[in-house]
Length: 347
Ligand SMILES: NC(=O)C1=CN([C@@H]2O[C@H](COP(=O)(O)OP(=O)(O)OC[C@H]3O[C@@H](n4cnc5c(N)ncnc54)[C@H](O)[C@@H]3O)[C@@H](O)[C@H]2O)C=CC1
Ligand SMILES: CC(=O)[C@](C)(O)C(=O)O
Ligand SMILES: [Mg+2]
Ligand SMILES: [Mg+2]
View 1: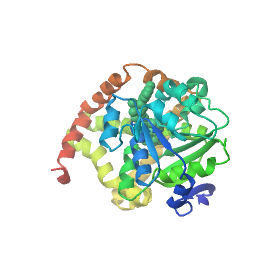
View 2: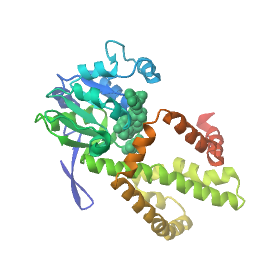
View 3: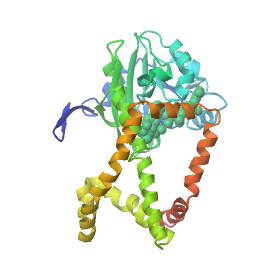
View 4: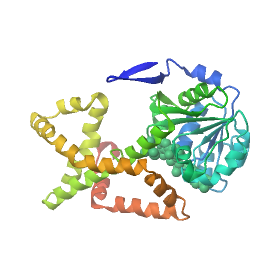
């Protein structure tokens, strides 16, 4: 249906409009092969299975995630296979390896993309940056996307709670004439709350911007800046952490999620409201140039190249773990660990 977001009209698909029964009917003869069992793999595969679809998982034998798949109930030889075997058996191939990992497996996937199959992504990365990835699908298959707007961990948790994370969907290539029904049925099947329309290019550029920006990069940056200013002015770690992170995640963001920013403001003191209304624009103006640089770096393909280069290295996991450890060991997040222990529900 068409829905107005502010004054802009967009295409959205809800579960009412495209119920689960219809999705099951559309995909009743398909074998959905989920390739990769990292973060999105488990979330999407388990939700599809619990929703009654015919799904198998492809993973490297002997890897930690193979064992995780077994622990999650996938049975070797029945619903869990080596990657190539899953590519052969699947009629819909859900390419959920890491974006860099997809480059290495592509020749195998391509070999098994016989006419009429569908190639499914959860990120526009592989085909948008085809000059860098070499991922150029054959013309007689559907190339579709469902990108859950959140972690695979949340996708699964919200499904189990009877809620639904929203996703975007897109069609890059309609090789069979069935691409629309297939993509929407899969979107509903993986547990999306509703689906909004995009294309591969817009998905990848907005997603790369968002995760580098307010969702992950900018938020850590702004936390660190405020924490450091408080600490250098004599505030204790617990005071600085509470006033920077804990209050935001525990008290104020849930109010924003519930009913918007003005609702959160309205539930704070008039003193806080006055100050926040005075200061949000200076913060916007100070950070906007950084967001412009970021978007430009995404648009020129620099961010994709960096991600491919670093995540294709043999030791990328070791390096990544070292960088995450640096965050974890910082005073701010060490203070956070203590603060979390002190939450009544945690002890
Ligand atoms: N992490 C998330 O929650 C989200 C991810 N996405 C997208 O979903 C897709 C999958 O992402 P994640 O689940 O984060 O992937 P991931 O980084 O967890 O990796 C998935 C799997 O790929 C395997 N893998 C990596 N390189 C490989 C190789 N060379 N050969 C064989 N297997 C290899 C890993 O062992 C792992 O099991 C990506 O396109 C990503 O952008 C989209 C939304 C959110
Ligand atoms: C969770 C999500 O959608 C991200 C942040 O874009 C990602 O994990 O790539
Ligand atoms: Mg995302
Ligand atoms: Mg992303």
